[in-house]
Image (cartoon, rainbow, N blue to C red; front, side, top):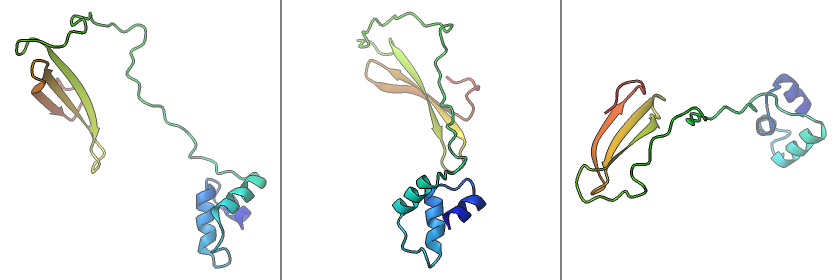
Length: 127
């Protein structure tokens, strides 16, 4: 039965073949470990779904420029709006799947957000 399912659905793995076997009354009590062991002994593997997607990497490489360290690890200040930091965060909306970008500017004097912007496209001018 495992051979017939794997020949019909070549991309099915252990879990899907096990689920198909459990639908029939003859193999309704079969264990998934037994299916895995039998597939290993018969050298059956599901083809496909094994390709890994490349992860996004924002590292610019050796040609990228770095800015001067003007803070020198001193991030505390005694005046408002003297030292500001910014950050861009990417969110993915679960309902539509589109990406939203949030840019915030933080004042290091009292750790409060001075301003923020929410945009749908990363190429739009932010703050």
